[in-house]
Length: 382
Image (cartoon, rainbow, N blue to C red):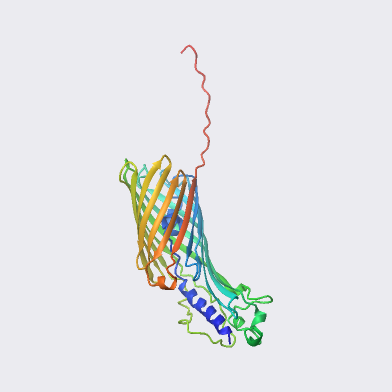
């Protein structure tokens, strides 16, 4: 039956869904501070910070899209005068799909695999001195991870029409419904039991040191542990009906494989003055997610063009994966950056040498209370 291609597409996507338990990674990780480490919440000079990243990857293959948005703010109170508290919220979306051909070459079917995280974060910034030159920060983040499957592009009615008449040659209850993914009425709509959510808890710690106050040289390092509760996701497919022939897509889901494995983020950054116009900013980022590890090395150079305007240029490398080219502008309270990943792994043969791009922006709002000035009258004889 021609529906075998459809079943293969669905089973391939379901098999890859288990692999998607790995967390998304960002080339411009410093532009996603709350994703990088909850301890970054409120770690800036200003009133409110808002920003985000849009990442697109492998458009012609499965069109992975991974945007993230965040907003955070420091609160001017704590247990000690030199300390402060940070609060924030963040959203991370990870959307990938598999696309194939249905009964006719011009009819496309697709299956979107979507994961979302939305959470609140809080941090306590403990200053080791009264001038806030050395700061240790503890941060926590609590939220919810939702995930689901959205099949589109084929009608249930077509599944029940003989293949000689242009249908899928199936009778009775569709095989998709047997997998728990069938729609009702007009087509393969997204059923309620194809979406699940679990609670999630993350925590992190960070150290910031002012190495040279005259040159404003800074060193930062931190580590974050994600998915501390190892949340267990429910299966998105039902197999309580008759068995459905399907290709071998790997081991079946078990109680252990449904649990979200922990993720480790470890990061360090230097900001050094090289001359009156140039600054050098190397970074290193280690990520271990679902048993897979990577190290990202980056070297940024910042050139002051004029007052409140800096040009940033960077090169990077992620182990066994990609080389990175980056460019950015800092204008007053606005920071922007663009990056492109050049695939170096064997995946380049499958992706037709397509890489990934990221576009990011962040803005810091300064809200100050206007001072009340009491007029003073001076005696003209003085």
